[in-house]
Image (cartoon, rainbow, N blue to C red; front, side, top):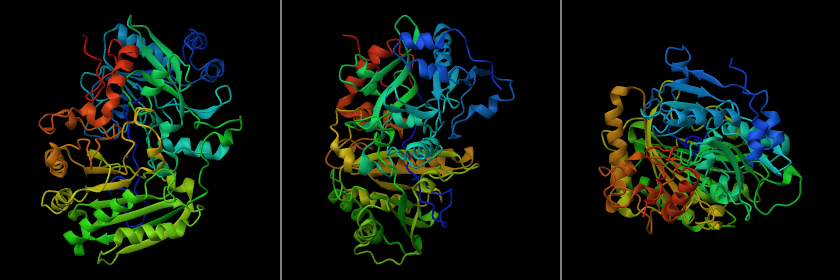
Length: 556
């Protein structure tokens, strides 16, 4: 149960756009009761991993009254602050097993945080009594025994990218916010600028190590892989998009692309780009008419409808259309591509021309530049919703199988020009599809495979006194766009539910979801019953739960 994280993409690093813009997301010695033996008995990490964990950090227990408590309490979204009886900072699988065992034995609710970027209060729920902090578990390396790259949940994406590139010249198609923890990002699916070319992160997931709790309350670590004959394969499958916080505590991921052979690590994951070409066009709201705004949205959608098939020559191009509220002042188009792909420059030019076709606007800024790929993916603060002060936010999302309808386009314009939105409010359309669509909906837990875009609606603010107004604006915006389907993106010809790494508890609230379609259908569609069966097998006591958790199947 690494935290329910986000699969956040980042905003481009244009000089004119600040980090306050929109999203684009000393301890006691380790125990000595036999980590190596305990893990080996359960088919877990094995001797090599156990040896590496022998001198690891922790565990550390921090309780109210300890000066460290408030410093460790908050995640990325300052809207949510829990009050657990203790924060347990752990550094190994063995420590996780013991912490979970103690929580279960004492009847205390447990939640887990790796990077702290959950959009909702899943780790700050008042019912949570024990908060496990996995951030010290941040190792990234190659496991020759499993012929796969091992990543611990506390490693943030920037660490993952840097280590994979420095060591082997490879990468994964993950998000562009380097501070996001691998723990939640991977479990929910994971995507980013390379996903149209290489698929979702979980399309390269070989295995997981998970601390689970048996029916008798025993906590143990198990390993599940995608091997067809693995008796625990269902647990692996559940972590290919089932989201964190549902089945157990993920303590290690293994990554290897499907179908690759040999033992050369540099051939087992996609090659990292050498350079990234980025084109940014920014327009001022001063001259943005409804016709121009809806034209940009329509054209962006149409291009993705036409260029998002698996194997498309344009699958390497990643686009974002970022629309601030009128109070924010700008609309921005971003294109990113591996600069060494054939015809990369002309593809970017063609994309920008297609999105702006028929639009009579003069850009306030038009920049095209090439930079090292790692620079682009690990720039501090990229994609963060706000800065050190502005850290309250609400984010909602939806998948799109094709362009917005005309009714939806009118709703977007209406809400981006009303009097209640703030300067840090707005939305994004994010390119998706491509190789993502080459995978069958049931092959992984990600059911939304026939989609071409993700839509993100958000507002960011500073003071608690502004919570009500900001929440009302973004909720009203979202409900208006999906008014014809009960205020939520019900799967159909245009919409296709939402992404669990952008969790939104409103989808389970009948005040905001009047569609009659439950949240679990919006997130998992036809994969939900199978996820319930995995839940029943691996978390029979329902230890791991939150506001959008997968529920055990009903008896009878």
